[in-house]
Image 1: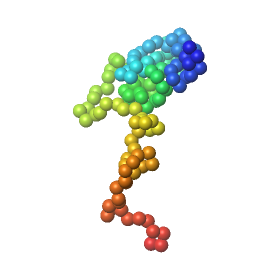
Image 2 (image 1 turned 90 degrees about the vertical axis):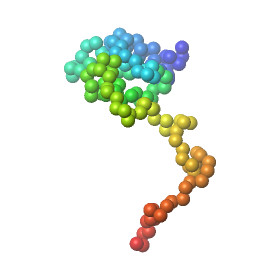
Image 3 (image 1 turned 30 degrees about the vertical axis):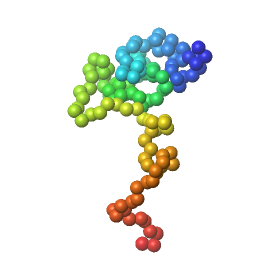
Image 4 (image 1 turned 120 degrees about the vertical axis):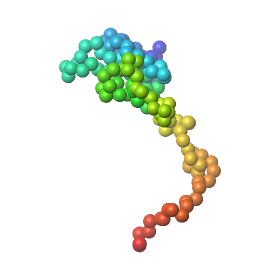
Amino acid sequence: MFKAIFSWWNDATIGARFDIGRRARLVGKDEQGNEFFEERKPSQEGRKRRYVIYNGVAEPSRISADWHGWLHYTYQQPPTEAPLPRKVWETEHKPNLTGTIHAYRPQGSLAETGQRAKTTGDYEAWRPDA
């Protein structure tokens, strides 16, 4: 209960859920369980505000391109009504893993064992006297 009241980084607080639930309608959910909302009434600028309540840690890189476009008014229709056409070369969305234990660490880096590969002949070091 304490976590739901005060820790906004783990999920939406009770107050945020109540406020968004009162003013907005649920538009849809993505594959990761994030919930997307749109206000019922337009703001003074004439647009309806759009919100996301993350499923778990509030990490914006966990939102796919189609939902990101809808949140930022690039697309008027949400992906539940008009999904983006997928190309054959597109891969599945992956969140940014920098700073986690799953981040990419090449051989020879401070966080990984092994030796870094030597530079090849196509690299020429800068010399200040040249």
